Length: 346
Image 1 (cartoon, rainbow, N blue to C red):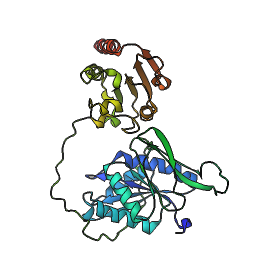
Image 2: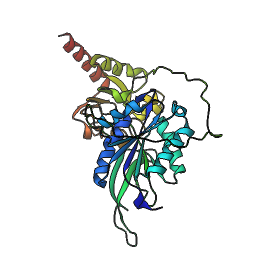
Image 3: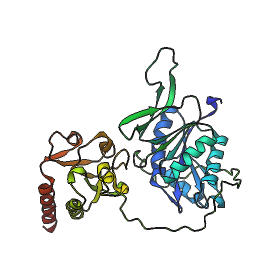
Image 4: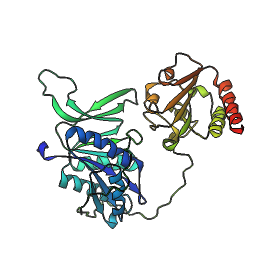
């Protein structure tokens, strides 16, 4: 493998039902940062059926080029045809870096494609940088520049690992949605479209979709919320989350939680904030009965305003909070809710 042949940053632009997912724009935003360090450009790869008209949206969010793979076999996501399509793009255009969202689709597609193109993949990344590898000079080891340094939680979120793939290309990573920041859109931007027809060969790995049944979401997407009222183990019980529900209703927010709450079975996984949950950036984040371990704060520390309520004045959550209240949440939260209701009435 000649590493010099591989140039450019490619991002997988995930679309479902003819709608681009938010992570598609986030990857372009991060891709632009990486491309600037490498002196190259960002190409979004759009795969589906009848999806060419979505290309301009990707250009508005910063894509320099858009490769469109349009085929009726790609109407709905299936592992094999999508893997053939993305692997075909990689083999043809030889990108240096390929980024895929760590969604349900991306976590299936990314590893499959990396195996097809004989390279490594770092999953569920929370940070991406360009730098030297090894990170520090070592005697007898050549330090290679301009490597993709992929950072992700390891060992259940108890430590952070930085991983590189210095000897193979492309360097591939799946990236957690909500972690990277999308650029402000440039309205009216037009995509430089490259149409590509890969060899989509039906084989015994193809599955037949008999029926698609769509189920309405039972919980709000906390990644879209402007105000989050988040509870931890300190709330005490699932029944006691009622006081958080009341606060969220009064202030127009959404309830979320820590991993301890999910592990205890009090709330569903969809509401979990943190390294092993979702990364959020609301305008206001209430951390109620949450100690503030690094696994949790990594998922919410970019919130505009953080308000912590905890009876332990030495809780780490106060280190990241803009405002902190030390005391009994069972007294503070209802009082805060009533004050907000009274203010609204006035």
